[in-house]
Amino acid sequence: MRFLHALAIIALAVCVVALPPSAAAAPGYPFGSHPLAYAAGSIMPNHVSQATRDQAVRDFYDAWKARFLKQGCGAGRYYVATATQAGNLTVSEGHGYGMILTVLMAGHDPNTQIELDGLFQYFRDHPTATHDHLMSWYQNSSCANAKGNDSATDGDLDIAFALLLADKQWGSCGAINYLAEAQHVIADIKDGEADTSTRYVLLGDWVSPGDVQYYPSTRSSDFMVDHYRSYAAATGDGAWFALLDRTYTIVDAMQSGSSPATGLLRCTSHTLRFVEHPESGILISLDTRLTNSLFLEGLASGDFAPFAGARRIEREVPVPDPCLAALIRRDRTTPRPIRQHTHTHIRSRIDFRLTLADGGICWVEVKSATLVEVGTAYFPDAVTARGRRHLRDLQSLVLSGHRAAVCFIVQRPDAACLRPQWDRDPIFSQALLDASLAGVELYAYTATITLEEARIDRSIPVIVERQIPREDDG
Image (cartoon, rainbow, N blue to C red; front, side, top):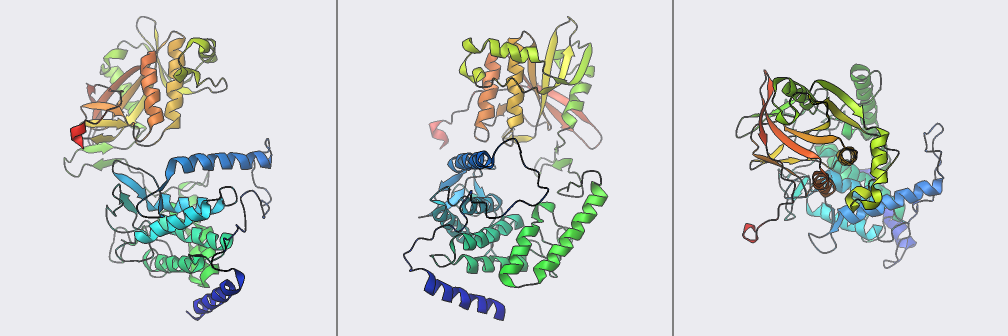
């Protein structure tokens, strides 16, 4: 405590002599200045210049900001629009990412400090039930805390780190004392999101020592070792170095025990395969690899009438270049949705190429769907650039004279139809509509899942048009 008190006195003295209250702080490390050299041996894209790489980052940041950084929920407030599901406004993990990004892009975007301060004020508006300086992890579209008024550790780790970055970028003499606020967050992280001996980070401040299931748990997405070093430097608390050492011990154990060949870290030590619906009790499969097996078994048992009589089945087949060339040749006369995808260097793999009884070829891409709301299955449940590429290549196959289809397998039995999720991924949804208009066939089937078996249940319709809410739906 004496150390923190001394830091506060020093910071106050610096602010008194450094800037008048009305002065605007210039960024100390503007984006693109590169004050530090890359470590020896760093892998860099050596075919483009540093200036080109910097511009790519600027362009991507501008696109991210336009889509995700929003102003609302109070005067001067900003939030990151995550929209993870219907009714969601933001989550603390996305909020922390946004705070770090705004600080790092100072010097490119002149409004970053205003936006960082607005993100900070939003964070302070949404504390958890037990800690004033940790963020409630989920807010709904009414800007209210929901789904439990507690935290997610990774979001708070990033928020504290962003405030430390802001102190280095602009100093702490303005409207917000970034360093002091960071120290408050760090203290609450230690109190609520680390075990009592500060040996590992918990999943959130909702976990208590008496929780035999979750208190012994941690996850690799919270292993932010650079953050821990910064916390130690900002607070003088050696416990963060102890946590750092313990985290490296955990990482070593995970690498040697779970992935000795690659050294990659799993998020958990187990694989989640199924979940039970809390109301109906049905089992829902989350194993995306299962759908291809279900498709193969369904072909053998005659569950898929559109592909009946397949006499040869090939898997993971590359789209042949002549098909892509056909797309280019027709480009001048095809509609815009096809023309925008003329990438001659891309060569995708499609899940199945079937040779049917009549000798015809049918290419089939199988997709797994798990989200069902009020009897409607939705795909995708997250933005999928890979799915868009598959649709583009299926269109090229149709243009070259082949049959091509998407077969959605809903890994649960309670869906009556399937729709693209326009609100979550409008680009994929439009691409699916375009593919259907171009002649790509769309099919969907439900599956019944038990602990003993998984099997195709029945065919359901695919409705690709965007659903327009009625006025009386509110």
